[in-house]
Image (cartoon, rainbow, N blue to C red; front, side, top):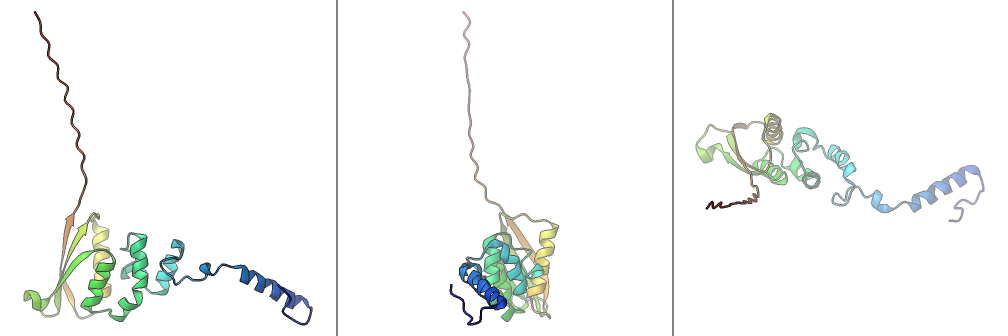
Length: 173
């Protein structure tokens, strides 16, 4: 690249060298907001920018695909935070088949709700329960109270059974 400055001094040469190196960079490294194509190592930094680290879904996201979907939907989740829609959306993003019933749907106490989750092929332990409770608490309406968290665990496994039978017969005359 030719020298951009009319004066031939050291500062201008340094600027020209820097500009030449900048031109040589691939633009794909700078397009970090294309969440589907960005390197996986940048995902936690994007999650921090969009304020979804920790209890707001990041801790419960297990796969890279779930993390990318969470980042892509972060603005919408924050826009509708505190609504039934936001809670349903985050359960959908994290592949949690969930159903939310509000107090008037099951004749409960006012502003109470029940969350029913079907966890398929996921483990369930105390930390999982705490993460789910924190996730729901972070997403729900401030005045609402979760009355019951129903968790149904299902697991699907492929079994291959093989049998073998060896028989013999001994005849003595």
